Amino acid sequence: MTRRYDIDWLRVIAIALLLLYHVAIGFQKWGLMIGFITNDTSIDGIWPPMTMLNVWRIPLLFFVSGMGVYFAIQKRNWKQLLKERSIRIFIPYVFGILTIVPIHMYLMKRYYNFEINYSPNPAHLWFLGNIFVYVILLLPLFNYLKKHSEGKLVSWLKTVFSNPLGLVLVTVIFVIEALLLKPSIYEMYAMTWHGFFLGFIAFFFGFCFVLSGAAFWNMILKWKWLFLVTAIALYVYRLLKPQMQVPTIQIVIESNLWIYSVFASGYKYLNKSSSTLSYLSQAAYPVYIIHMIFLYLSSLVIFPLEINVYLKFAIVLIATFLGSMIFYEFVIRRIYIIRPLFGLKNIKHK
Image 1: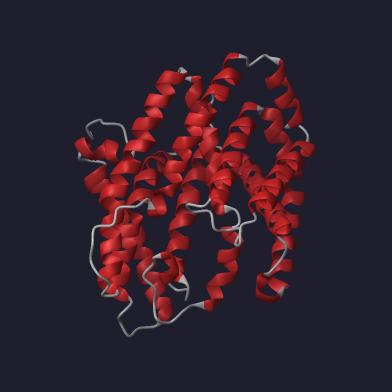
Image 2: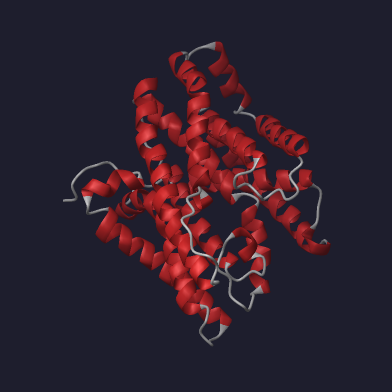
């Protein structure tokens, strides 16, 4: 099977955007409400681009995760896939809850002089828990689709997703989810039923998109400019509304259009192998797991300083990225015994 380098790139880019977004939360007044160390002075100007990213960055990761399962199941039977995902997702998830999260929560409590206690919880790792549950729930169906790759159901899926009306159907299903769950804030995905079911839908359709083959990708490539221009128009309309308040249905449509245009652009421009991609693709998962420690460490040191707020933002951003990457390179990647705790294969570094 031909490897899809664009999907690898999109996973790396999505993780990078997540880190950027988390750094930006530290410069918003409401950051402490969701457990972030926040600077006394906010940067209001970064909120508009944050709201653009926020409606699609997490759903994109769920789509990409479903795509990854499609490729994984082609090389494994269902038992092997379940074992592989348990090792790669569930073990880091539990390890992170028990060790990684309590460390960065300690840093936050120390900064604010809160009572120090051991507080294991999923925090930013909630995403991994969702993905593992989706694998368990959808594995029977995915295995059926693999075994009946020439069957009527697969043929129907390929027909549906070779037509832009198939994407209308997908968007309608996301709209139904939002109308049924009625999230108070659409972008509140973490540890909510809305986030769980939205992720489930995206994970399933990510699998179906890759299953549909070249016809799907050529279709979204053909329509990518319409997706992109409409997404931008809906975003600008949001910007012009008081407090950016628009109907949830509009946010759902905008979110999906961004994602379709990202997939189309990735397919056209990013489907290329490189040593950089190989390295970053391996690093993305461990960096996602540990980045909050370096974000909180740098926030703890930099936020009390009497320096320009934009300089603070730049320093914290660089420190978070560099700290996470250095720790990955010289600790996680090279100490082979701990590699599985961060989702890597247990092999010695050469």
